[in-house]
Image (tube, rainbow, N blue to C red; front, side, top):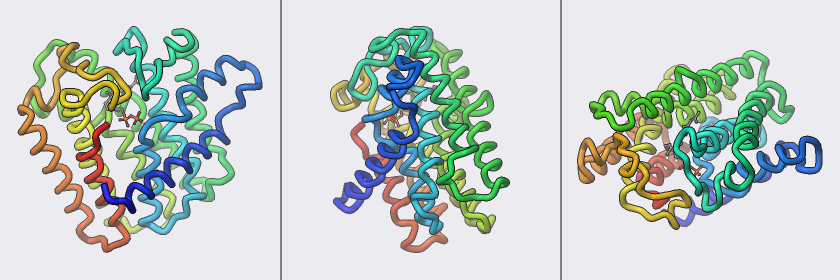
Length: 298
Ligand code: GRG
């Protein structure tokens, strides 16, 4: 990763950390344990990929970071809630997330379920009410619609349901792709599209190109996730390595072989770049993020 990109990522990660800290309920107010749990999972961890996409899309379109803090927090809160619930014994049953104990281990199962629920509700509350988001009511409604659709049964939750049903079965490549477009891709795509919605007069061709870019990187993100699950290690990932194989989950390396999966990630990156071909230098950070997604080590 070039040093300018590294610095940019750090600035955005620090920004969203502060924005989340300011918006999460204080651990001092009732119900304190629930608020402590929400903060335990949402603060101090993760790559913040989805907020990065919100801020970067905004930058390309000339929208200030201040105007996008609430949206960046909203997509991250949905992501964090999904990780908490995914780690529960009823789902992936994992003990490690972002380099620390999963929430149900650090607290308890009931608190983890409730903290996930509350983080999800807070995400929608921010898009509906946060005063720093300076957009029209119609734009707010559009943002809420994008996030609800991406999160629900036609989006991330639907993808997770397909995932749970697929354990131990053999999926075809289109079936695997469909699962990941929903489970992982929908929220990544929403992150770009919510930021694009903040531009009131956005050209529909520009919006379509950004949406296609987001669709490509949503999938390349998952292909890389599958590759890392085989090739990386628990300490680097901050989560248990090798679980896909252990749980007999369908993955890109399982279907395409490791070389085929890497080729697939590269092709998706190239498609993402192609989507931005009409853009100039202002979109360079989006191009860099696409490359970062397929080259990252965790
Ligand atoms: C439980 C409703 C519900 C949904 C779960 C996101 C998800 C759906 C499950 C997480 C399990 C998983 C391995 C998903 C595939 C890729 C993914 C989303 C990895 C984690 O995201 P990163 O790498 O994590 O962005 P950090 O910690 O960096 O934010």
